[in-house]
Image 1 (cartoon, helix red, strand yellow):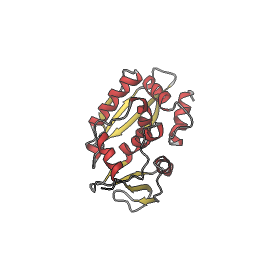
Image 2 (cartoon, one colour):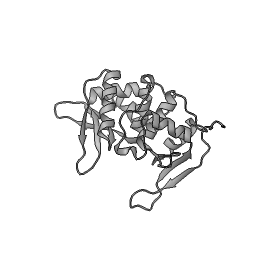
Image 3 (cartoon, rainbow, N blue to C red):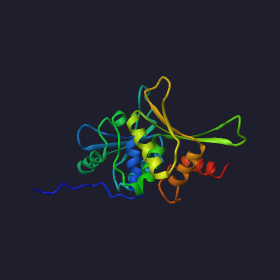
Image 4 (tube, helix red, strand yellow):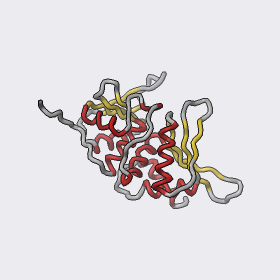
Length: 214
């Protein structure tokens, strides 16, 4: 029997782990057992994923929800071997509420986390009445509490932090993992450890300003 070929580059590296993070947050595995979609408002993210996975597929546009405006960019490709690889590490069809642990090597977890952050994360600042300095808060959203619990556990184990909490957003079926200033700073330092690594430029820019205390 002829061996099934794969057109998708899938060797663990900082870049590949980043894409797995994007798929865990902004990706979708179809029920066909073959097709994978990565969807984002940021064309930059889709182009990075396409380059890292060495794909030749065209980037499309799509609408979401009740809107007819095609403001999302989508990379769709079919690869049974890569699909089965994603299943083997913990991703599943309709994963948004079912995703739990993802089998990412510890050495690449911070790259995976950066991909999750670029997909479903945010950085914010607020002023505490008892402090003269702005407070930084890093957040990652997910419809799966188990996924956020796993992320929090790995972050504590690998990044040596003690904080972080998960709460449900009001009137939404989405959970939010949040970190305080000291922990957020530590996580940002570890996620953005080299300038050449893939990262959404607008979020990297905000992170660098916060790390410089601006």
